[in-house]
Length: 249
Ligand code: NDP
Figure 1 (spheres, rainbow, N blue to C red):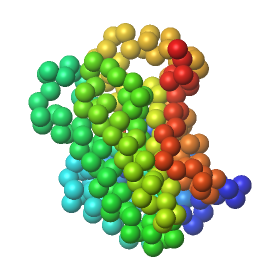
Figure 2 (cartoon, rainbow, N blue to C red):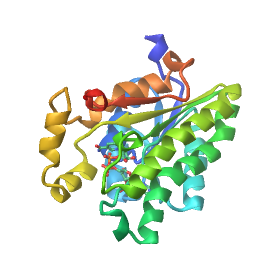
Figure 3 (cartoon, rainbow, N blue to C red):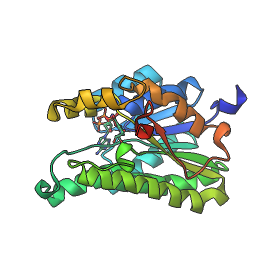
């Protein structure tokens, strides 16, 4: 369907070599977009690039230079840039009083500052393309609090406000900026969490009306919608994709 057709569009997905990023990248590829994916792990990058026929970019998003170089290389190798998905993320779970400043900065730089830097670097390319789409990945921790997520929650709350600010500023350039707030999705990130928090699986199953964990493919549809013409009048939003987790009282 033309509304969701991404043929002729070029997309960069950070953290597109696994988990939610790969699920979204698969959706964009199926809709016809040319893709670049970025991450630190060469082997994961190569496997994802092969599966998606994508350009693989090695980048450490906590490093401003590396982050900017990733965007330039994506635009150069794909010939243009229309879509940026700021998905790369990490978490360190402990009580607030136990974090070092380095740990705080690592989580903030990976999850929030990198989204600003990549968007900043992508802006001239999206302008040149006559408009574009930025999709930022938040979390249930963009909405809720928890004892073990001080920097993660701050970064994911920040993602929603960054999304709103960019949406307001760049609407004049026909650039739509939206956030996706995934519920509990089965990935490497949450497999670690399941080990750290023994009651997590039971809590997620009890609290999620859909009665299951999400899988990366559950994020493919929203990625296509927010990257396509279908969402041209949608900007500044933060859309939960959570099996109902955030509306259960
Ligand atoms: P994964 O751990 O499976 O994937 C994280 C991705 O980010 C990897 O591709 C990783 O690649 C990349 N990444 C991490 N740090 C860096 C860095 N410094 N530089 C470049 N790339 C980096 O986790 P998920 O798929 O679960 O998470 C993806 C996003 O979704 C994150 O923003 C996360 O916060 C968010 N999210 C996840 C939820 C879940 O339940 N799983 C729920 C809500 C939000 P590499 O290791 O190669 O660098």
